[in-house]
Amino acid sequence: GNSVTQMEGPVTLSEEAFLTINCTYTATGYPSLFWYVQYPGEGLQLLLKATKADDKGSNKGFEATYRKETTSFHLEKGSVQVSDSAVYFCALLGGTSYGKLTFGQGTILTVHP
Amino acid sequence: EAGVTQFPSHSVIEKGQTVTLRCDPISGHDNLYWYRRVMGKEIKFLLHFVKESKQDESGMPNNRFLAERTGGTYSTLKVQPAELEDSGVYFCASSHQRGNYGYTFGSGTRLTVV
Image 1: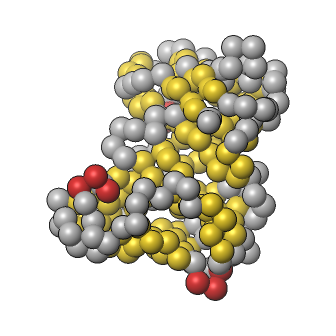
Image 2: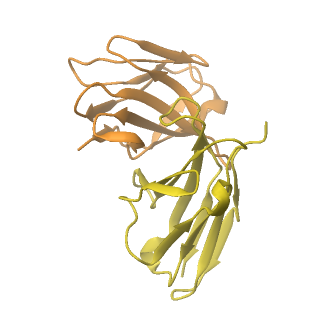
């Protein structure tokens, strides 16, 4: 079956620091990969996605590249802000999971001024 | 357009009681999904409706959970009787087409069983 392994947190950074949250996956076939974010008190929001190998998803300064050779989709941001504090989830769609997402366990990010 | 609405946002019930969660999807979205996140763990799929039909309920943990989607509009998820391990955040999502393209999540219902 499909699985997603995500860097455990919590991650605490100072404003303007560089962020990396690691994500690796196991899936058959060619899944699509996603990063979701949950801000305090809000629902899950799609942050970015990539649908095939070597695609780079980007949004709000965040980037992630679909690496098939290493089965990874690490999330990066060059300079985090306090407003980026949230829970980040890596997820995949496809392979054996037709229509349903497989999520990682989530990483809590706290950014201090 | 209005988003996916879930209520209540929070519910605290005693073990053995019944709780019903509701999800109103985006109008016109045939696909409706329920997911659950138990404290600190990954978000797990529970089930998928296409209109009023259950397309996939492979993630439902046991027969204490009953999901319905009468008329293909809103959906309810009933837990009866609730157990301590049912505590978590229940998310609903809807999409026009199967798959993630256009998947919109609600803000979730936090269920605490004491």
